[in-house]
Length: 158
Image (cartoon, rainbow, N blue to C red; front, side):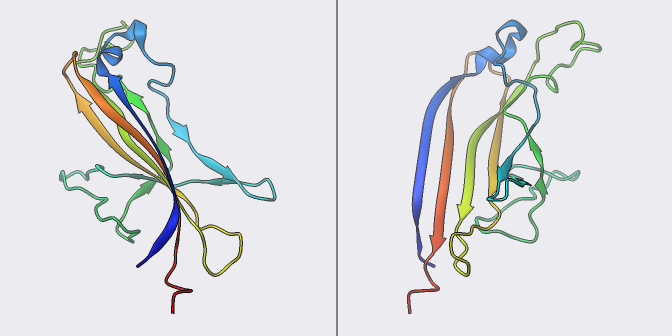
């Protein structure tokens, strides 16, 4: 399968220690987000989210493979940073306790594919996220954001 498109990639290094101090949390910490696109009629269309390291109750990875699959479990909401679920003390959140473990989105990809059967149309895009977690208060970690906009070229290459 041949693809043609454009990829925009942003990389940075993130200081995880910020997430362990409740007074220094980024503004986006502990919020759930919903992503929408607006079509030409100004209707909002929700963008599904694929969490790469999502596990079921048995601990098995659910979203494997690099191509769209019926076995993928898609969700609507995502977070960028999570410090609340890492607080282990009873009533720790209300008392302002620091977490023992934090989670963050380490790789975020927005996947947009042109529809080859309809001019100026796209398939429903999706957000592809991989989360990491750490209890290391001194860790610095790379973070990436990728916008992947492409079209499969098989339909016109004969």
